[in-house]
Image (cartoon, rainbow, N blue to C red; front, side, top):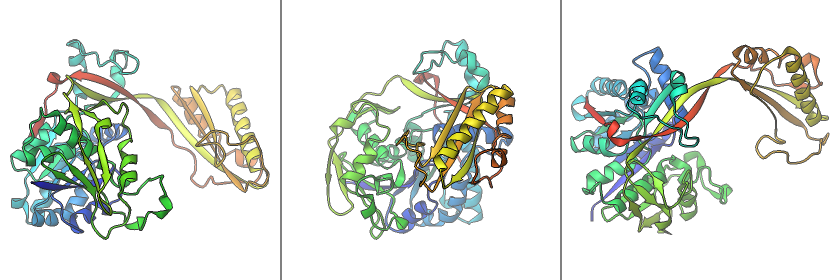
Length: 452
């Protein structure tokens, strides 16, 4: 029975740079998949593209390709990534240039998969009755259309499957689903029908298992985390997929980390929602049908997955400008560190009120005391050695937020004693990018595949 090995090389934009190199060089793989995109990432990339039409993609993907393209060509490894962000064509051209410079251009066929960006079509869509209603509130996007920074549809695996069928070995996509990066090779290699919902759900769940990289091979693991070996050299996960829909989660031999039923289960429940109805563009996957068992050292078997037909909608991720924010910090030291930090917050709030500053929210946190889990104790224990006082504001009055940034430093000489930690200087004022989830009929959007 045919099988393939699909290796995760990246869980997010900013993940460990050595991981994809290790996946390519430390053992056999057939595919390397790399996930770069999140909701906020798209808006960041769109800002880059508006400043420079040649940008708008994950530039470190291009840097990586300059290092591993010779390995990929020699070992016949195929790469699928959503590193294209909002400019897959520019990213593909940049990788093509590198392949030519390395003298292996004839061995590399690059595909750009796009069509997900609908930010330039908002007025057209609204005129045709596609109101892009907020999935949580039901409100149409109409009033906010001029504030939109990015609007991207979550495309499925079909464009990548087409690219593989046409011989591409480097596929650079825009906003495709994280799971589709893994599903596409399984459809292509095994000849699965894209209406075989159990198989589509199998590939989807395989993709979900490795989409966050080392999070299923020991990273960010809550169970006996101290016993996980050699995390400095953690091995990223690999899906060993079989034609019948069975797959194994494993990693290269000799690498650090741990893959067992517990680490895999922790990843499976990540961002899962309704376990019986995990909706993607390709299918609806039933996580409650998963059969899972340890199958040896660093090897977990998954099988028996059930799926349902895909819906008639794509999900749309929209970001829009929703005011400004700024955050500042100071460190107060023993004695009475907590009391000093609390008083600092009271002083600032009184000054804000006297100045007439307008904020939608003011948030004060005492890092080490209440920032993650709320107030752990009402005690102002004078023996706590130090506490970081953090205060943030947000609002639609930009001038108020800008004035806030000038009020932190004066506390050094006009507030409680024993303060430090202001070496970073005055806080920066940042635009707030809010998230607007919506749905759109699938016939409204088409995947596009170009070759380079």
